[in-house]
Image (cartoon, rainbow, N blue to C red; front, top):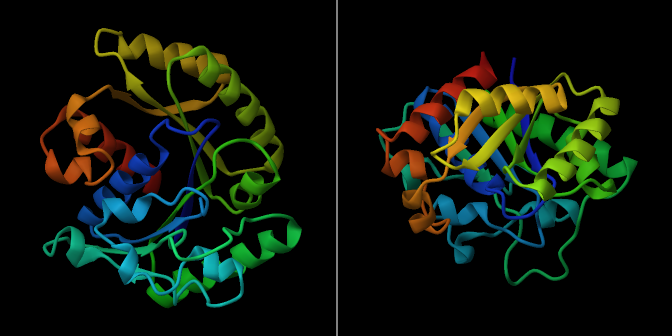
Length: 251
């Protein structure tokens, strides 16, 4: 049964797109057919990770929202851009193109139906095992539209007070949406911290499963959102943690 996994955060800049790209790649190394949708039309990012240049983008998620195409037409096979030897396949629907104005956004119950039907057709057309959706940050009507179609929701947070507060609000809201599974990813944790203690504390605080705790990595910062960390650093401890989390998500 194909799974739809959404990656969300309360704030910008916590590594949401980076996490999506790495999880997608690692799932593909396991032989999965993986679709990725970038729904953040105002700040498109994920295409950079997969080497999909803007001049190669004919249709996008923005065009889908505008009724110019279906999601299948906006999905690009980026497998060979990443690694020709992948066991699985990667299909990316970019959020937007710099030539497109204005940036459209999900909004309202009609868009819930539009997105749900579009995703189901995309899954069928590309025979996907997993569909990853990178959402807009925050808790508002625009972000909630996409969250409602999730089988699994990943909420990413960092260990600071603003993220603690924002994540608390997010968890309380999504509990009312009957999402089958909600998990937390703690990102950029200082290496000097005791990760077992962090996991226990965060799970107690939110009464929610912590699926991964990822350390701060200078190597990741150096990539500057232009490459996939797990591909470039396959033996790094963080890659091992991400791989374990990816396997857990589809178990």
